[in-house]
Image (cartoon, rainbow, N blue to C red; front, side):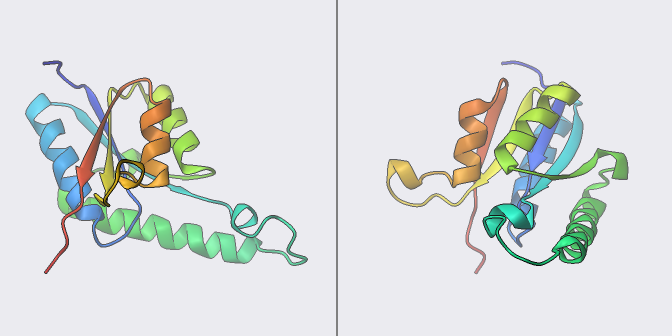
Length: 146
């Protein structure tokens, strides 16, 4: 079994992100590995086709600030330093691959909602990360909180 040196945990900032962080941190701790968090925020222009006749800059800035705050909130109990918390704007799978390559990551941890059927096993971001990754990818099954 390989020993990981840098674990990148990709989170979507939902309430279930803590489950993904806990699993990734446990693996990092067992391996003495560096741990980083990433959330990739799609630009509003992507979501709305770029044909909106209005300036979305202030809304995008607010979304980015909210995401930074949420990442910090999730990272705090796990003692993940600010310089290892990454918010990137772009297509999530591409940004995760780029950061993983730039940082020398050897394990990417993503969440999976475990829907039925092979095509629904992973969400679109998780599937994109899995298919384009140059390192190991761990899909953590999200458990419903009762």
